[in-house]
Image (cartoon, rainbow, N blue to C red):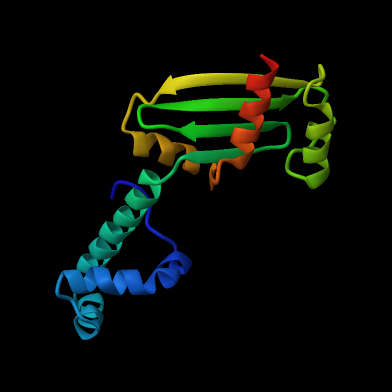
Length: 159
């Protein structure tokens, strides 16, 4: 398995897709029940293969990630060959970026000495999807990129 097995809830949400996946291998519902009962290791392999296919599709389509902590916000723009990063850090110890109030504090203090803004660019070094999956394992979540684009626009305008 390349990534991580989907959770029970994720499999339930993707029930139809999983049924189509099994059908593409000529496995109908009755045969799947038989495989689960008589060949659990084969069933486990099918679950793993399906999970990897889903993850691969998600990671291929990932363009932006965000990772929030109490005093840091990491914003990632996942491009084809490299990843661009914006890191926002509360230097005052006053904010909690995990709360609405902390995000309002950031908005009010963005261009003060209380907020450090760093940007960076890094080649993936490894497979793009592996790098993105590593960030997700560390707590990053998929994003529509609005916050990254907004902050990047502010940074560009101030230069």
